[in-house]
Amino acid sequence: MLSEQSAVTVRATLPAVGAALGEITERFYAGMFAARPELLRDLFNRGNQAAGTQRQALAGSVAAFATHLLDHPDERPDAMLSRIAHKHASLGVTPDQYAIVHEHLFAAIAEVLGDAVTPEVAAAWDEVYWLMANALIAVEKRLYEERGGAAWRPWEVVERVTETADVVTFRVRPADGAPVRDFRPGQYVSVRVPLADGARQIRQYSLSGAPGPDLRQFSVKRVHEDGAPDGEVSGHLHARVRVGDVLELSEAYGDLVLDADDDTPLVLASAGIGVTPMVAMLGHLAGSGHRAPVTVVHGDRSPADHALRTDHEAYAAKLPDATVRFWYERDAPAGAGTGYVDLADVPVAPGTRAYLCGPLPFMRTVREQLITKGVAPADVHYEVFGPDLWLAK
Ligand SMILES: Cc1cc2nc3c(=O)[nH]c(=O)nc-3n(C[C@H](O)[C@H](O)[C@H](O)COP(=O)(O)OP(=O)(O)OC[C@H]3O[C@@H](n4cnc5c(N)ncnc54)[C@H](O)[C@@H]3O)c2cc1C
Ligand code: HEM
Image (cartoon, rainbow, N blue to C red):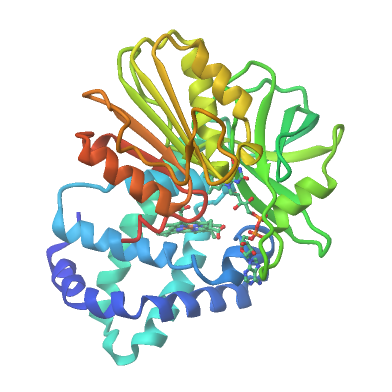
């Protein structure tokens, strides 16, 4: 895919670009948001920007894409592109915006690397950028077409359920009377809310119920930690949004979707609010005649913090061959483990496919344990509730 001449130049400059990624990222965003403040206000996640910890995803993925092009010139890293394209499409990213990102990313590269960016170097990285951008634009176009466009739609809150002290479920139906499209269990919607300072911020929430004909539901954990600002969108949804209010939602996106025959053994493992896509998957399995073993694994601070626990247990009970294992850091009832999830004595059937969602350290541990038990690495799928920093590595 990459021309031979550019491949030589990219290979030679990749270490320098990789080493300067932090600085490039910082200048890229600073330049872009100075020129286009509306992008920070109404499109990018300003919590991520302010926290500063998760900003390397975009530039990091360009470097990861370049590495992939050099190592596997005849293959496209479809999994990586798909994840990004789904996220972009849920945000309503448009093809013309790629020129804006290009302008500011390349200005940042030139500023940071200075004279090292000769016209030849710039041309080679330009080729990498547009290969990636055009691949993303093509996938995003298909995703939009499948969903009838990139529009935000109004949804009325018809029910608001307090799940735990920190988690609320919103059930919504189209306020414009339009039909509800199907989604695949595991997918998420973007929710866009107006904030007090006039910004409109967007966050993703996994659909937390099995696909239903008329309604959608998602469950939101209020983000509030000592010493850090409260979460803007989760705080807004908890404090202000009530039955009868209207929210703007995207269609459903996301490529962590349940993909299993009735006879595929499954592990569905979650921790904390990572339970949401797992409950949607389990609900689907319960209603679709899944026959093979399903191992349901969940870790939480306490039973009282375990959101959607009733659904979790009820759906598992409907399956002919389900094993349920819960762990709690405190107040574990009889039958549940105390402490963190530990699969050491949990049997895993041959040919198992696993779906994980939760904090990264949880997913790393569970993934390693599953692989030790013989699950193929390609059969371990995961969702990250933030920019995927596994992608950029
Ligand atoms: C695919 C996907 C699915 C998801 N599904 C769910 C789900 O089902 N349920 C759910 O609850 N969540 C889900 N999330 C997470 C959700 O999208 C939001 O990230 C979450 O609700 C927090 O958003 P917020 O606006 O409340 O917090 P933000 O305002 O974005 O804050 C995020 C963090 O940044 C910190 N921060 C903000 N400003 C600063 C600052 N100035 N300095 C230092 N730190 C700062 C905050 O303290 C907080 O820890 C999902 C995410 C993804 C990507
Ligand atoms: C080739 C160009 C681009 C690349 C390689 C790229 C890459 C990425 C990556 C890796 C993520 C994180 C995905 C995840 O794990 O969640 C991301 C998220 C995002 N991208 Fe892009 N992107 C590109 C272009 C664009 C453009 C043109 C826009 C629109 C101006 C855009 C807006 C966003 C936004 C808003 C997010 C969500 C992150 C946040 O809200 O802070 N990106 N992109």
